[in-house]
Image 1 (tube, rainbow, N blue to C red):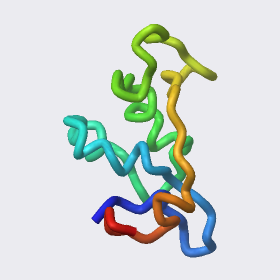
Image 2 (cartoon, rainbow, N blue to C red):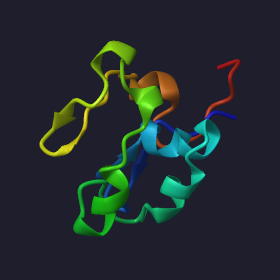
Image 3 (tube, rainbow, N blue to C red):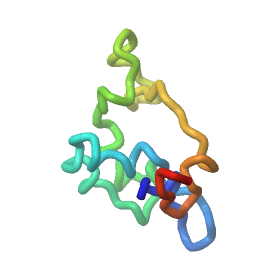
Image 4 (cartoon, one colour):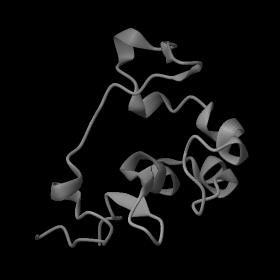
Length: 92
């Protein structure tokens, strides 16, 4: 199974996206364990891990870019393709 495309709270509000959920699979499990998935990505409780640069999420020619004090992310994905808040199998 692929991880869900988004983590939502009990009201359906998005908390985290696919980049957070992929961290354990791209050798950043330590960062992933620091994230409180029950709070939004920009909650003060998640400030330290969300400021960690993930090189795989940045274009090689544009490393070290920041947006609002956080490392830039140069890739995007469609949550509908990734399965919304439920895991999908690769064949889907």
